[in-house]
Length: 205
Length: 205
Image 1 (cartoon, each protein chain N blue to C red):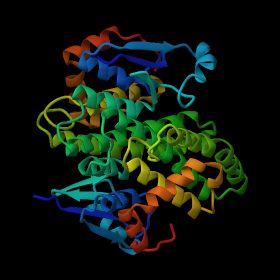
Image 2: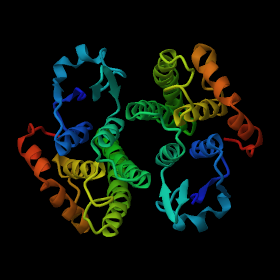
Image 3: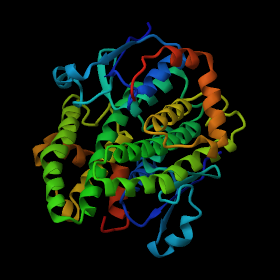
């Protein structure tokens, strides 16, 4: 019997978009419960850890968007074929999460002096380090995907990160990373993803 | 043919102990390469991401201690029996990582006033939240393990965190969490773990 999935998150991409991309890539039905900020105080107490997103499956509630994404990827066969490939994806996703957190911290920093400092570190150290590692992984894999010869959740996490960095005031110039540019085109052109991107709600971030 | 593992980390528990606990729990041989701080400048350039730990397996170098731990857990059958159980472990480990990261930030804060603020938040919000969740999880599982009916890497990550919190100036009173206290006794008494703990190098942290 097919599992019933309900995915609860705010009506944004934010930290919660990768699971939605996974449902789309796998062609699996789910309830996409998008919560309005105004309803959040009422809902908070019903979540496992007082935060969003959480996934409901078989009557159980699971928080933590990365753990959810990994779970769905494994359920849908989009996690990589071997244990070692799964590890490679985990490592790549870890880099993306670090960069995301740095970008968020920097974006919301109110102290102007500190913000300039964070921006410098971001552009000169963190971004080149993360995307250098990703560009290298892509160069070493002829399929054009991050790991292995087919789409994995790592690829979806990457297009989501690209998107976020563009939303936060064009933090990344993809021209410096030709493999990454090609990757984005390749993933976004795949039929299920392309359709999903055309129809998903338009949100500020 | 058996895999050859070399695990590279400093001569500390620090962020790198959970993989060592995994090798011990599984009874799997590996080379435990403990890097001296004085050698670090030479070693740094040979690592995948300029940091430790990294695992060498099948001639490949993989960084990120949590990803390494998850990989080894899956290799050794210590990851949980179902995809849902694996996700439950992932979610629990995420909470533990958050505590660990908060402690690192706290310990490196130089401004005394800010440090006191962070300490208050740590003791009054973060510890109760994380360990409340863990205590609840243990209460709902009669085996005494975190997830399922046998030891998983989640249990090893927890005793590692417990150990870190009892260390040096990090003293946190976990007596409020009787299931956690019982869990630590139980896991540390498992034959392979007990032997490992007796024989591992004594390090300050």
